[in-house]
Length: 261
Ligand code: SF4
Ligand code: SF4
Image 1 (cartoon, helix red, strand yellow):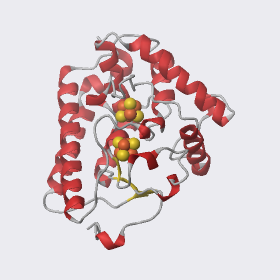
Image 2 (tube, protein in one colour; image 1 turned 30 degrees about the vertical axis):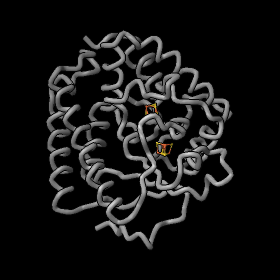
Image 3 (cartoon, helix red, strand yellow; image 1 turned 180 degrees about the horizontal axis):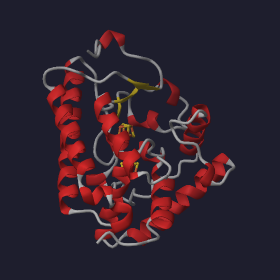
Image 4 (tube, helix red, strand yellow; image 1 turned 90 degrees about the vertical axis):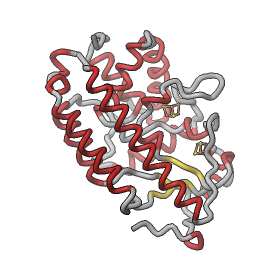
């Protein structure tokens, strides 16, 4: 069980707490696992690389998975608030959108790709994500083809890259002028799970007190992660798990700009 005592608030800048695992959160996670299994078992998903087709059933199941995760987050946040934690995140607050979303699964990339394709926005956001890739390349001093994945041995390099990227203060390709996320309904789990318990100005990586801010990642349970990894293995798209380079590679190299019909 997660220790949410207010007098044990951590002081690190970004903290991952163990998942809240109780009688209310467990069934939500179990349903997520079940739906992800169903998704992974869809023949069209398995044959995605050949067919370039995302069936309606996959979209329906995906929407449900996101809903369940949002429900889980709402539940955990309520618990945290009950313990005296103040959550500062509100719609339109977007300093955190200068951080590159990381740990994006293959399934999430397909959902985002499909969403952009259906909206006729793929070319526009391909260009914008390419710009983000150029910023990443600049801060890493390397071509994005060679970027490390989260699970790779060189995790410190991966973390350093993400930190340097956030210092560049380049807004996410999907953030519009009014600070709204243009893929809000299909944004990755990694965007959904972050919350700040200190004022939003401290979320700006260039703020002098950035390191003192309290931010938490409310990750899904391990069995949800396992299902996502299984789907990654079966889809085997071979792309980065960072949002911009992953989407750019998927569009240009894997799908070769082909529509999902
Ligand atoms: S993490 Fe920080 S910048 Fe992002 S929504 Fe929350 S308070 Fe705002
Ligand atoms: S995908 Fe949306 S929520 Fe995530 S970083 Fe980009 S604008 Fe922000």
